[in-house]
Length: 320
Image 1: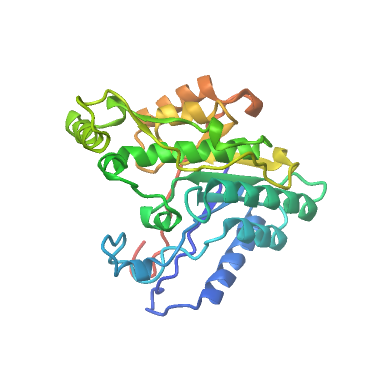
Image 2: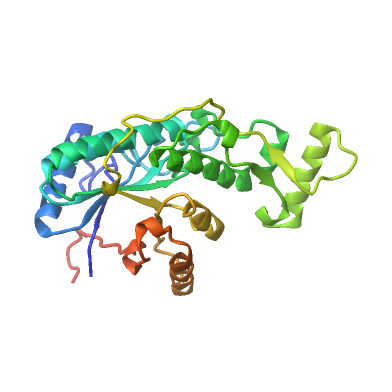
């Protein structure tokens, strides 16, 4: 059995009620990372967050109103990954997860990853250490809203819970193609078309149809609703253009079966497993991935979908 380790770097009071400084939190992280490296853990997965959850509590839609402090301090995984590689000898680094909707969107994130791979090749010259990029739409929606990832009209507002997943797929297509070294433009963007199958109920779909009738002056509810591209740009290609792609491992943070299949049409993309996923769901995912995993990644292995185990250290006295 292979073992990885996860770091949240949450800035919250410790068991004594003391709030460490941000600098101390990162020193603690690096100390723990060095120990994990010595102990033989395979990948150090680091949570990424954006923007203050403490300040966000004041807003109209607070996401963690009872959480003291910040959910996470790692807002720039590529930079922290390079610092982490320099501080260790053997362990791989992974993001769990990097939001490709926030922090500039999929183009900026792809370019950061290419840069990180290039510097990793220099730091680990002649070695085989890898960068594992777990990517998703992000932990909380508010972290992507300042970058324009929100409903743009009444149709999108009515469709948003389902549409957000489609926005992620549009972004993921751009992200993966750029990392492949392709020249990309929005002329060849993944089309976003809403239809009944994307929604949980007839009622949810009817709301979208009604909004489309109102917006577009239609005589009857449409069977399909076309959504304009979120990312509009001319031909571009990221630099560095030739990073060591053999050091890159991609892992999607989505449990949408169709999305898992679609992404593997572009590149070898593994999947994350939630701790709450049922055994039946896990086996179904393995079966699906064996059939759809991109051939450039070789044969699908069970280790391509990490399982989660929670281990709690409790300071209370009298516990066995």
